[in-house]
Image (cartoon, rainbow, N blue to C red; front, top):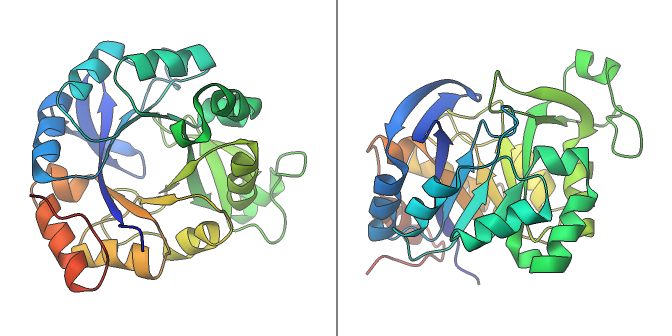
Length: 273
């Protein structure tokens, strides 16, 4: 069985790591390069860097900050936020990223996924999906086409989530995940807007639904507050990796503690040296 990955996430706004609740009310969590170095030393399997306001502010990802982070880590680094073209992806890979995450731009132009996969390989393309549970009002504003919400839809994709909680798209999150993989995404970063930052556990139904429907790894994101939540995301949500921020940034748990907890419960992990 493949080992399960523990992935700290650096949500960066204005050059600082921040953490909010449901993508709003952010508080400062530290310097991205310093945190990256600490997580590398602790034995994290990967690191995800998200410039969370780049798309909403219509600007490029902060290359200098990415370079500073990449200099501190010797583990795979994924970078997302504000990537709109294949050239943007290339710039991040040259700055030290191993993978690139796309979200808002991919929703606006799905062919961007295919273009990135053709040039860099599917293993480099992470489709980030910000999903929120569907309400009656969402169904009234559903989008057009075969990705649109319907009576069976349970989660909707939102974009521009770095500012004010994002914009509704009318797109079914499950359908979008499947389409993204068909276009060439090699991994799904699945963010629950409802659970983000609440530390009450991941949306296990969302995780399991998407994980069981796509043939690529799914990273659980949004809701980790206890080590038990990481285990549940893997055992019940069928996630291939678990992303967490608050529990690591503010010192509640270390990467080693998380991995030892999972190993004790039979989850295969790579323990720090």
